[in-house]
Image (cartoon, rainbow, N blue to C red; front, side, top):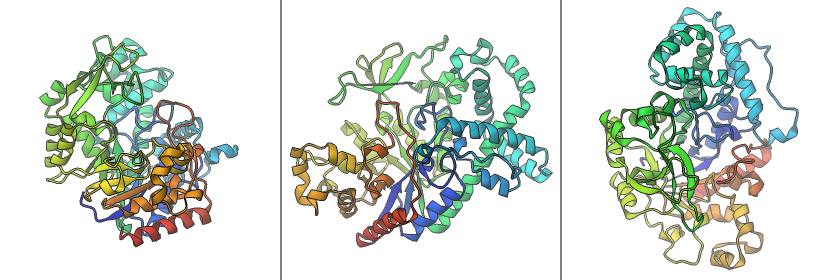
Length: 498
C-alpha cells in the first residue's frame, strides 16, 4: 500500500447521522469527512456501496456495478435544480429509526425520488441532458442493471428465474418491445445512478482535498438474483434450466460442523479466461474509480474455492477447485499502471499458497485483535507477532462483536491472557484494544466507530449466520460525544505517529 503510517475508522454510510432514513452522499458524508480531517484521522473505511438484498446486506447485491440508491441525497438534488423543493421529507416518526435504518422506508424514498426525477427531467436544459447521455454511454453495465431492476419491480420482486420465460432467458425481441414500452421507467433507474455517481464524485473530491483516503470493499461472489448473473449467465455456474450447478461456501471447521453454505453460483472460470477476464477487470476498475484502496473480501478464493453441489443444503460435500487469481491480479495490476491499490481479506483458515499469492503482489493483509488472546504465543494476531508494516490491524470488523461485547462474552481464563496488557482491567473499555492496535508496527490501524463510543453488542452491525437486526445500526448524533471520541482517537493517533 502506498500509504504512510495512518489511522482510520470503519463506518458504513448507512450509519451516518443527521439524515432521514439513513446516511447519504450529501451533508452527512461531508460533515463526517470534515470531522475526520479536523481530528487528524486519515482513512474512512466502509462496506460495499452497492444496493443491498432484502435483508440490508451489501454483500449480496443485485448489482456489482451500481450504487445503493438509498445514498442519494434529496437536499442536494433540490439545491442543484433536479427536484422541486416541496417534496416529502422521508423521516420516520418512530424514535427507533433514529438508531436503525428502516429498509421499507428507504425503498419508499427511492421509489418516490425515481418518480420525481423523471417527472422533473423535462425541465432540464440541453447541456444537462447531453452530460447525462454521455455518462450513460460510458457505463456498459447500466442498461442491463436498469432493465433488471424494473423487471423485478414489475414481477413482484421475484428472483429472475421465476419471471416469465421470455424475460428470464432474455429473449431479445421480447426485451426490445418491453424497453419501448418502459422508456420512462428505465430513465428513472438511470437517473438514480447518474445522480449517485455525481454526488459520490463530489465526496471523493472533498476527501482528496482534506487528505483523507477512501477505503472500499468488494465481495468475491455476486448474488444469483442479480443483474450480473441474469445478463451474463455463461460466466457463472448456472444450468440451462436456471438451476445452480455449483454454489459457494466454506468447508466445515471448528466453528461449524456443516460449514457455511452461501448459495452464490461460483464462477465458470474457463469462460472468464476466454474473454481475458474482462468482466472481473471492469468490475474492479469501476470500484477503483470510487475509492483509493479496495478490500478484496474472501481473498482466499482467489487461490482456490470451495464448490458445493447446487442442490445441497449444507457445505459438507463441497470440494476445492483452483482459481485463476494470479492471472486476474496480474491483469488488474497492468490496468492500474503497475500499482495494485488492493487489500487482502485473509482471515480464517489460510494456506501457505494463499499467503504466497498475497505476498507475490505485495498486498496488505488483515489482523484482528479480538482473535489474538487465546494463550498461544505463536498466534499470528498477537501484537508482538505483527513484525512488519504491511498489515492493517483492527480491533474487530463489521462481522465481529463490538470490543465491549467481546469482553463481556469472554470467559475468565481468556481474560487473564490479556490482563497484563490492560491499564484498567476492572473497568475494561474498547480504548484498551484501540491503544494496543495503535502501538503495533502495522501501517494502518482501523477501529469501528462503535468501539470509539465503547458500545456493546446491541450496536454491532452484523452477526453472521443470522438475518435479524443486521446492517441497520445508525450513529445517533450527539455532537459532544462523537467529537470527544474522535478527538481522543486523533490524539492517540498522533501519539503513535499515525
